[in-house]
Length: 429
Image (cartoon, rainbow, N blue to C red; front, side, top):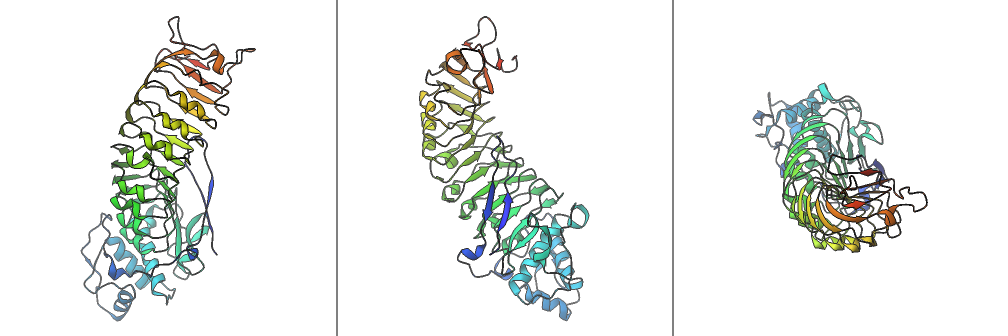
């Protein structure tokens, strides 16, 4: 059984881990889908789609087209035509398995549409005409990975200067589990057909220039556990179909232009969710009260949005929560005393809001036994933090970072041990 190890990257707050991807042989396999059953042009290729498949209509062309189940009148994108011509004129490796032939064609299209010949920093063994495409890799962390039946289960080409769109031809990789193309220059929308792949588990597309909205059929990827499209140019609302993704554990869409409410993500439907990074977007409305049902949630980043209103006391029910960032929003109201139940909390950033009232007396180092970072400044809060978070014998902070509005004679908060005291968002020392 082939096992692919994927190192989860670009985590914020020091939450990094490894995930083991099981081979698709442990699942029930769908019957292979031929090219003839799906569109033969890439909706996102950005290239002309009127290139005829045949030039001379010779016997070799007809034979390859038949093997790929391309109809005689098919019009191909430029990248599809390049892939077809390479297989026709350069390829020396004989494949008798039609499904593997189609997969070879699909990854060749990916190679050409992302400017592999001129842009890829590492060719990863691509276009080796004498070898099976399952050997087009450097190691288990780079290139094409296959299962024991030579079916592609992983494409790993991060930080490799890929440019251009994601081709719709990825839909022909019926056994794909891992798509890791982060830290490149990919553009255009994410093909909706990607989420119809039955075994897809890990999608890493962060740090690119992708645009458009998340496809409405996102929820069709019922096995998807890790989805990262942070730092792109994506927009629109999160599809409600995310509620159908009961295997989803990590959802990272930070630093985009997403809008709308958080109801589809945090209303209590996706109970497997453990890591939610939705910061640096344009989400609005309030945090759903149903968030208390997300008992697996360990990381919640919601900073720099347009969220407003009081924060739900139900956040205090998240026993596994370690990192919470609600900073730079428009939250109002008082701080819930119930949050003192977050005994595993390590980081809480709630600065730059409009919180008011007294800091709850239950908020102290005893209740927050693991807390290292607490930022309360640039709010309308009042209170005394000395007994809660200062060492009474040495006047040293009990936290690594403790920031409050404690600067000046008219400071609203008393704190003799804060690592920084502020009188505004930027006036701190």
